[in-house]
Structure formats: C-alpha cells, structure tokens
Amino acid sequence: MPNNEYGDFQTPRELAAKVLKIAGDGTAWGRVLEPTCGIGNFLHETVLLVENGGAHAIGIEVQPDYVHSARKTSADILLANIFAMDLGQDLPWNNTGPMLVIGNPPWVTNSQLTVLESENRPERVNLKNLNGYDAMTGSSNFDIAECIWLKLISELQYHAPTISLLCKTQVARNVIEYCAKLKLPVSGAMLHLIDAKKWFNVAVDAALFTLQVNNGLPSYSCELYESLDSRTPQRRFGVVDGKMVADIDVYIQGQAVEGTCQIEWRQGMKHDAAAIIELTHTENGVRTNTGKIIEVEGEYLYPWLKCTDVFRSRLGLSRWVIVPQKKFGEETGGLAQRAPLLWGYLNANANILDGRKSSIYRNRPRFSVFGLGEYSFVPYKIAISGLHKMALFRLVGPMEGKPVFFDDTCYILPFDNPVEAAIVFGLLTAPPVQNLLRSLIFFDSKRPITKKLLQRIDLVAAAKLTEQQTIVEAVESALAPLGVPSSRNSILETLTRMQARWTGV
Image 1: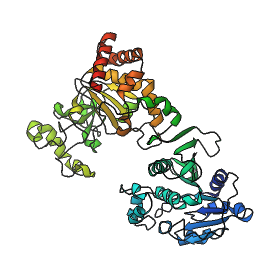
Image 2 (image 1 turned 30 degrees about the horizontal axis):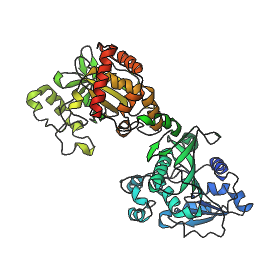
Image 3 (image 1 turned 90 degrees about the vertical axis):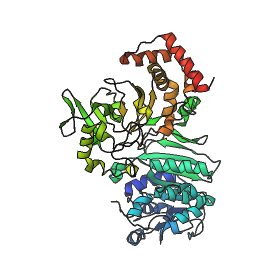
Image 4 (image 1 turned 180 degrees about the horizontal axis):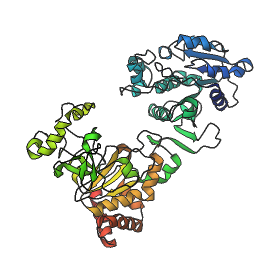
C-alpha cells in the first residue's frame, strides 16, 4: 500500500525479482544501491549478488519504520534524506566494480508533498545548486522521481552506473529530454512497460526505465518494450535534433513536413460550468441537463461539440452552448438590456458561475468564458480532440446557419472559405502529416495532442509532398457533406493561391 505522505508504493517481491533479472543482465556487480529502499524488497532480491557475488549493497531510506524492516536484508541501510546527500561522495562503499542502482522512487509531485507538509522533497535552493538542476526549477510543480533521476545521473556519473528504476512513463520521457538538454553522459536506455494496476492497483502508465551512465557515446534515444517479458523492442523514442519524438523510425519518414504551421491552431472554449452553459437541443426547444426547457435569446446560443463528439465523428446538432461575449474580456453587464432573458438565466445560476474556482476568472467580467475570439465565429473549422489516442481531424461547417463551437479539449483551425478549409483538411489527413503525427504523439500522455505539437505541421511542405490527385479527392469528399460545389481546377487554383500566400510569393 502507498504511504501518502511520502508518495511511495512498496514493490512486491515478485516484481522486484523480475526487475533485477532485467537490470542485472548477468553483470558481475560490485556495488548495488537502492536510493529509496522502503522496506527493502529490492534489496532482498539482491541476496545472491551480495552473498555469492561479493557485491556491496546500500539502501537509503528516510522513514525509520522502513529502515527497521530493510535492515533484515544483507544490505547496509542508511537512515537519511537522499536530497541532503551527495551520492558521489557520501556513500560508504567497501567495494569497487560496476554499480547497479535499482528501486522504485516516489510516484508523487513536489506540490502534492507540499500540501501534505512532507519533508521528503528537495529544497529548491539545493536543486539550483546542483549541476543542471535549474532546468527543473522553472515550474512550481515537478515529479519527485525526476529529481531523484537527475540527482543520480549528475552525482554518480563518474561511477558509470546502470540505473534501473520503476517510474511513470512520463517521468522517463522527461529524464531523457532533460539529459539531452543538459548534455548529460547517458546511453543505452530501455523502457519496459509494466501493468501498474496489477502490481500497485493504480491507473498509471508506468515502466521499468533503465539507463547507462557515462558508458560510451551519449545517446538520447530509448528502446520501448511492451512488457517485462518482451525481448524485442516495439519502437524507439527519444530526442532528435533537440525535439522529443515518440517513434524515431517513423519520424524519419515524416520529418520532411515538420516545421511551423502557417495557420495558428486555437483551443476551444473554456467555461467550467457545464450544468449552466451547456444546453441540450430538442424539437421543443433547449433544455438544461435537469430537463427544464428554458428561453434565452438565440443570438447567444451556438452549436456545441465536445472532444468525444469530434473523435467519434458525432457531428450532428445535439447541444447548444451559451456564449455571453463576442470577444475575449468583453463586458457582460450590457446583457441586462440586450438580452434580458439570458441575463436573468445567468443571474439565477450565479452561485455556480461566480463560484468557478479557476484563477482565470478572477478580475474578469462576470460570467466570462475563455478561448474566444474572432476565429470562434467563422463558419468553417477543422477540429481534433486533444485527449484521444488517434490523430483524427474533422471538417465542420455551420449548423442551422451558425458556426460551431468546441470545448477546450479540442483544437481548431478556423476558415471563412470552405474550399481552403477542405484543402488543409486534405493535407492533414494525407500520409506525410499522419506519419509525422504518429512519430510525435505519446498516447499515454494526459493530453496526447497539444497546440504546440500541431504547430509543428508545415502545410507548405505537406502540399509539396502530397500528390495533387490525393488532395483533390480529399477536398471533394470533405465538401460533399457541406453541400459546397467544387471542381478539380478550382481546387488546384485555390491551393496555388494558398501556397503563394503562405510563402509570401
């Protein structure tokens, strides 16, 4: 069971044995370190290395109760806070030889430990004093395991250790990215996925992350294995030309269309009050989620699609959304005269709207929404869900004569011209861009698709690498449901004008 204050999950002996089998890999280890050893399950599994191989094992643990249990192993257990130590200087080794670092650092963030008033976290001033750690202190929140990883690499690099720790997959990616940015001497990385639900009863994407330090030429790529029992890597991820890539081999096929998108991607509208702002479309009018039919001025109602609607191509009119502003930051007090029915409805639900907790609503006009601009009111949009595990783009036109709004888990490109929208849609769905996205997206991320990622699509390059006939067919198919006529000549002429505008020619 996890200890909430310290954010730890004690590793079952069976899993520790599997980890040691992969990490050990037959090497004659002279030293074994577990930096956050808990009750010592990993160290119990090193008994053969210690008793038969002559290795010296050391465990570090901050909790006295755990130290008592861990001292039943053959290892030397130090009661200490790892963040108060210099691991390169303070460990009392009585042996030399190859070093193996194993374990399962806390699966918790610094802010979570701050809320719990735990002392088991790094001091920011200490992190800044460590080589390269300033890269981690620019944010108010970071994963404790990431700090432990960088501390191990930085302070033990001259011991050339093999470090093999259980951690979240996002932590492993961050470590690879940090190491590349700071040019730390690492190579030979492997990531073996584990079933965290089975072993720890938590819904987390986790893995065994193994890294060679100061052993050969630096490399910032990592082989990904589907399980601890896999022998062949599924793919390689890592940093290429300073950028994190999900599949290096596929990236080679798609990188020709990587650059900067010529159109700015926008995020959908954020309101944080679905029970009030989102309404259901019925034959008899609009109703709240409680089933109550309400009357508000139609000028402030717009068709509404959420990320699951976009992903599953449920693009019909089933919901409306209230948009009380025409532009970001617009004062809303005038609604009392312009839209008295809406003003009355919003005020009747002011306890919910005024109680929205996000700081973005502070010092803003009452009943404000976010993710709003002129682009919100254009008739045609390309949309994609940011939360799902496939890069599926949708071209959406007006419904009942009104532009469609999307929730803030979607990303959109706005267009006044339907043919231009369909051309960009054709480029985004063609193989060059799809290959690039497959190589960049980490689908175990909380939000696999982001604005930053989408802005890496170079539409000019995509147009050059996509056959004209492919573009024409995609445009014709996309325009047909919108009832917009087209011809091959008009499509290619529009494409030529767009390319000239994008390139400034």
